[in-house]
Image (cartoon, rainbow, N blue to C red; front, side):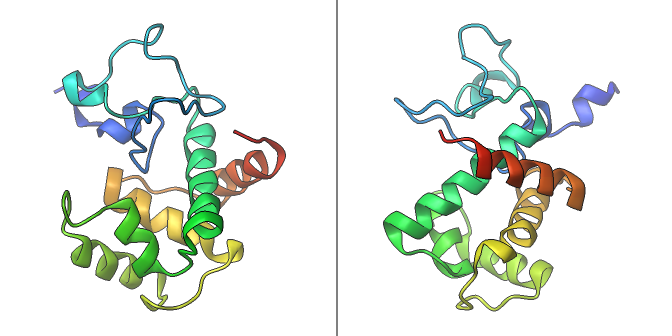
Length: 148
């Protein structure tokens, strides 16, 4: 079995949280669909592909910021309910898993300080990726320095 076959879609796309493509939205570091090889078959076309893992994580930070500003989603229950709605996921199980991995309560108010732990837990659930502190910090610095 090739190592490529062992990789999850999120790993192949440098998109550990499986951020979906949204018409009209283009992230810094996102590969244009027309110039990038299709990764992951037909379902791969649904998800963003990033040039680097840091850019994929940076987009997740940007989405968390949007959730906070636009929807006032600041706790795990609210964030995960938007990220992985019950119409497509077992949202309650996702929330329980993130709470167990982070040690945060489902209704606990999170600030940007807690976002790296949240993203680390979500990447493990979404893509089986173990993100280290250095890559989370680099991606956070990109988030702070770049705007969509």
